[in-house]
Length: 289
Ligand code: ASP
Image 1 (cartoon, rainbow, N blue to C red):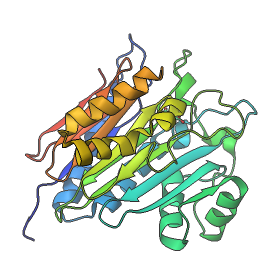
Image 2 (tube, helix red, strand yellow):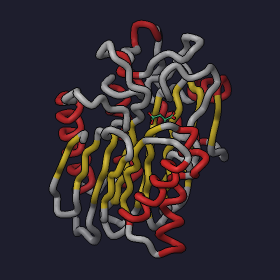
Image 3 (cartoon, rainbow, N blue to C red):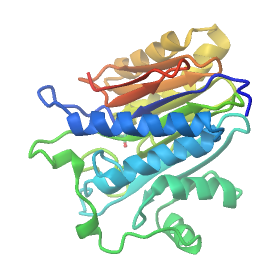
């Protein structure tokens, strides 16, 4: 197959990082996963399929505060949020406060493809996921292995996300989370909000992690695109500008992004961000700080 376009990929495993922890397991996992994503992209897979596959894997790993690694909320329930967006069509799907399913990002993709809607919430989202026959969590207390408290110490954030550029020049983004630690029952953060936690258009694909309330008030993911579109910003400057705005509101976290030329960006104003980058020249990097 002839490659008409450079491909690239960025993953994050959340901005929740403890200063003195090594994160070897997460770095190894992210590197291996990024290599798999790179192989998918060079085999011609769509950006949409790649970001979904990357996020599904991170959800199932139990290493991050998403999917299996989710902590219970203040009411002892596991409510998960996720979203996915395809840049070339600007189609998007999301679920919020979803209970009882293995892959929230898979449910988000089903919302995008099987309904005329963008976001389904709570019991309605769960009824839809059931109807679609999506894989269920039979026993939440046995399945979930809260990554945020696994170390006996706590981190408040740890969402996962992926952005990709495929060989046909299409961009896509996906994000999935268990939300912030001990969030209030019914609380929804930026992750399933298109424009706040996730965005993809013909210019950029963006996924955010951090204190969701501030990312929502900054409309951070869409702001990266706006800075490129209206101000002609370089990708890194657009990401830095959006992150600075989150910071001015008192929020910390990180943003990963990719543009249509294959520029990649992964910046944070937190202690670190678990992340991996596949550059257009094929170089793979994985790191936390
Ligand atoms: N942004 C997520 C939320 O507020 C948390 C995170 O990134 O870990 O739900």
